Length: 313
Image 1 (cartoon, rainbow, N blue to C red):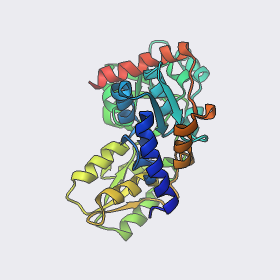
Image 2 (image 1 turned 120 degrees about the vertical axis):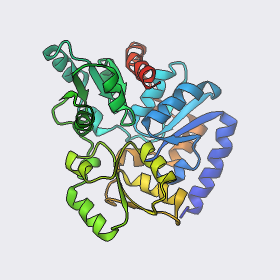
Image 3 (image 1 turned 60 degrees about the vertical axis):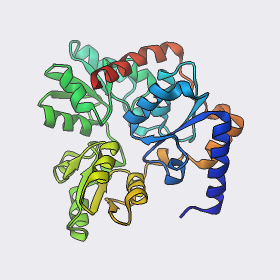
C-alpha cells in the first residue's frame, strides 16, 4: 500500500522529471513505488537498450538499479550526466571479478574468448571480448563459435550456458555468485510446491544448477515477466529477488498469484534506491550520486557492450 509520504514524493518527482527532462530507468528489483515513476522498467539488457536508444531525448539519466547498470549508461552515453539513486548499489558479485583476475585467466588461456556478464565493473569490462546478460548469454556464447569460453563472474550462469550449449565454460573467478540467488535450495522449491501444487516454477539462471533442474522456466527477469504476462496459468513461484514477484502481483493480480520462493530474497543494493534520493537528484544533482568513469576506461569497455548488441541483433 502506497504511503501518503511516498504518494506525495511520486507527484513531486513526476512534476520535476518533466521540468528537468530527466529519464528514470528502474530495474524490476527496486521498490514498486520507484518503478511506478520510471520511464522504463526492465532487466539489465532492456535498460541498457533504452539508455542506448533513447538517452538523446533527455537531458540526463537517473538509474534506479545496481551501480554497474548506471556505469553501462555512462559508457553508452559519455556526454550525458548519469546519476544513481542509491548510495549502496554496488553489486557484491561485481567485486568478485576485478580486472587483474581476468588478466590472470587470459594469460593462462591466451586463445580463449572472454565473455563477461554485465554484473561487472567498468574496468573489468575493458577485458572482455563481448558482454552478455542473463537474457542473451546462451546466444552470445553460441555465436562466438568457440568450444571454450572464459566466462565470469557468475559461475551458475556459466554452468547454465554450458548445459544448454555444450560449450566448455571456464569460470572467472572459480566461484563467483549472486548472494540472493545462491540462497535458494531444492528444499525451498519442494516446500513451495507443497504449498502451491498447481504453481509454475520460474527461476533465474543465477540460481544453482540443482535448483534450475526443478524449475519449469529458466530465464532473466524480463523473460520471467513476459512469460507470466501471457501464461494461462494462475499461480507462479518466482525464484529470484522478491521485487519481481511484487511487480507481477501489482500488474497481474488478483487474477494471477505470484509467490516469491523466499521472502528473504532481498538485494540490499537494489533496495538502497529510494524515492527520496530521486527527488533530491532532480532538485540538486548531488555530486555523491553522479556516476563518473575515466574516459579511456569507458571507451575500452564500450567495445564489448557494442559487440553484445551486434550479436544480439
